[in-house]
Length: 451
Figure 1 (tube, rainbow, N blue to C red):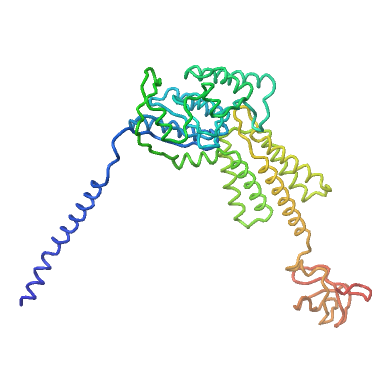
Figure 2 (figure 1 turned 30 degrees about the horizontal axis):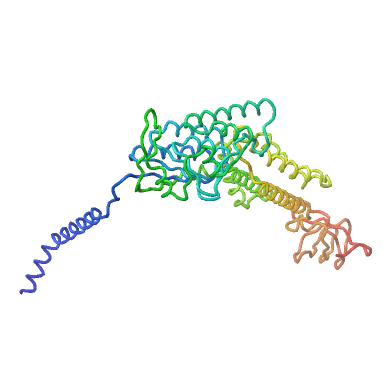
């Protein structure tokens, strides 16, 4: 009796026990969150890293980081940079953002072995505090075409004059060496961190971030229309990374990646058109080609180079079907190589595809296209081996006298056949054609091949 009463009471209170358990679990979880150690009080400094070319993704990343630092109340934004250069349009936008930034921006060329080349010079000069790590260099800001060569003529002179005045204006704004800023553009001079400090190109040589904050602490910088004193002593550094969208754009903005995507797309589509039904090369090639076109929307290209690449593909394709004794193939490979070298040859950037990648890709694509084209052409000219067409030219035995029709045995099968006269059973015949399901045959003379 007591046992039944206990079970009844337990059953009636079980919902209450469940609710109490859930409440305790939620209370414990909330207490755990509240009990998490809070960030240590004190000044906060944001840190981002730029490692690679200057492009729209980097521009967007720096703009976003400046706004985030302002919203968070960070004492400064450190841009750790290692760049060979990039797009002039993106560089101008970044410089404008730094010059008008509502928070101090510290550009730090690091780590050791890094450099601020070309576009990196302007960004470093624009910083409120310009710093470099030991073993780094800065300079070589002369505008060049995508292939690395100097822009000639009136256009080259205009670009050089504009870039030199742009560099001079930035240096004047920040109170830095304007003469060196001009020479970095006109004469492509490049100097080490020690020379840069001695020439008043930068403000600080720091071995690491902590050393940078220590040396920058107490400096007076102009932010907007007022001067503020940096209070960075014992500052807590928080690092931020690019978002997924920015990482994708940054990857597609690499000329080496864009070029390889273009070559992969062309080769994939060629393989699909040469062997319809394989599917995978076509799908992969289409995706690669679309990504390459997306890259061309981000970075400027030379359309003459693109046309030469397409011409090279057409000539290589023609070599497989036209007996040109190698003229079309050689011309196609040369056109493909020239187009590849000229593809990013523009006045608005100093981006360039690595020469080793160009020559490797051209050799690979040319060889594969020629081999695939030859195999396809050879297979198209090969005698059919299946169906009625595959029987033409074959030798068979007459099993039922042809007068003029009868039966023959060929390819392990019995066929109705019609001869060019009476042919006795047991004689050999050659299939010369067919009419519906009836084979046309002729008597095989003694002197003819019986293979």
